[in-house]
Length: 518
Image 1 (cartoon, rainbow, N blue to C red):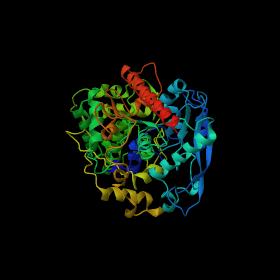
Image 2: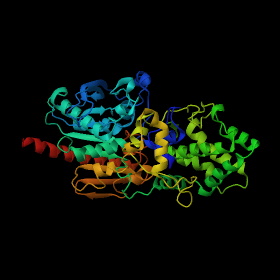
Image 3: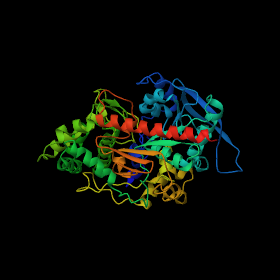
Image 4: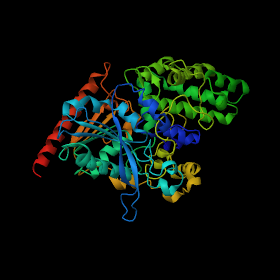
């Protein structure tokens, strides 16, 4: 249940472990996160050679829905006009929970097809993330500031920016089609902006968007863990061996000798070593989150998304775990430790591993800004999630998810900033955006079966309802289709990208016809 405050996810020692673990998945995007002071270094280390200019929209309203608040802030966006032809479309990425550079670097599909369409490329940063801090260093200081961090305000930001770009920043763009792109939470935003503002945005590619992962949307609380387990089992892992290893951690933590073995076999940082029986829980939570993150990024080629990994990393992780459990508790734990080592030390340069983010920092950043996604999770983005154990999944049981326990975690994180239970709205997302989209059009919802977030997707099969399209990749991880073309791409994802490009072509054609009548 503590996994619920997730996404994006991961970082600072200020977070409680429950927040840190959920945030790791929390994202639903999951692009590496960078602190503002590290952005210049990141600019010089871009992997794929994508080029952009950092610019700012100077007069963004703090509150789009009040006529008594005239305050403004600066919103950052990245722009590239190299492929743009006058009157061509605007490809607009709806930024999610993290610095915008990470999304620009990991959404190669936009860059790849921009020349074909003569498109301008825009990546807009989400308020309260990266450099876009409405109240500067005080943005996260208290709830009276944090209250302006919401999906609704972010969508309104994007609308203001799009209108200004078309009329003032980009030449001959007043009648340009606007196509939204987004992955994970950003995919939600892409779908929602098309649904809420169809007169502004002409179509949306919503990759791995868990649009229905909310209360009263008929999503089972343990579907995430179930899909992770399925991904590992189909990659060769023996579920009984993994369960035996988790049980062995409990048993070994009961003695000094056993705890010493756990510290050694997992190469734990001194600050996060197992010192008492109760510490077995944070180690098991850490391993569970590692496996869930690996399932999200199970790409067919080596990648450096959340951490450096080989191609098909889950299959690699399952090689030592494809046998029946051993009678030796230490042997079972040793087999599981190989999976952890693969995720955190594939390069062989990590000396120790931090398993408890309350006490030390891990070797790799995760998703999102330290407080941003937890705040969203504790207000409107309440996404129930827990583990059931066998036969549903091979993780230690944490179900059921309850709002009461969730609020307890939220209080630990935000009470000092003025948070209280009255601020959470667990049903608001479904009330605001809907649990189906009867009047929506021109949206592609793509999901991969390897990706645990697919459990909250629009559909779980390939289907079309009007111009709403569901595309399911049998061998697809988290927003795999949004990544740039790679020599080791599957034939399946190549076909999916071609289909998405054809949908975009049709949307642009429709937009031209619309504007020709104005």
